[in-house]
Length: 138
Image 1 (cartoon, rainbow, N blue to C red):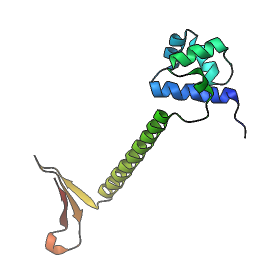
Image 2: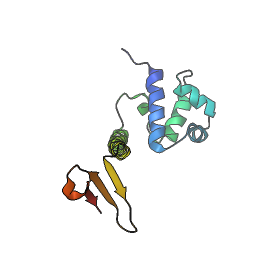
Image 3: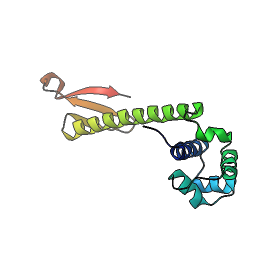
């Protein structure tokens, strides 16, 4: 599958804006073009003139030739990796919280929150422990 120049340009502008934290409006203002025109370029509906390409590149703080590069920006790769790692961590935490909440709701754990301590108890059938065993204490 061949990638069109419009597609490469659109992706590079979007990615670079993301890296710099620029909205379409801020990019448009810096490049002295209309916000709608930036949107149309990113949607691959319009293709800018050389003059506009140079202004966009200047606003994005890159060489104009980089607008047509298929290679990944190193800073972008790091940011994407960071996003991916953070999303993975967030998902693991959410999964653990959901499993814990399910166990509490199913009656496998009971929670005792006195004034300063936080104790989680796991229910057990062992009569010696009166049905509760401390699981964690902070």
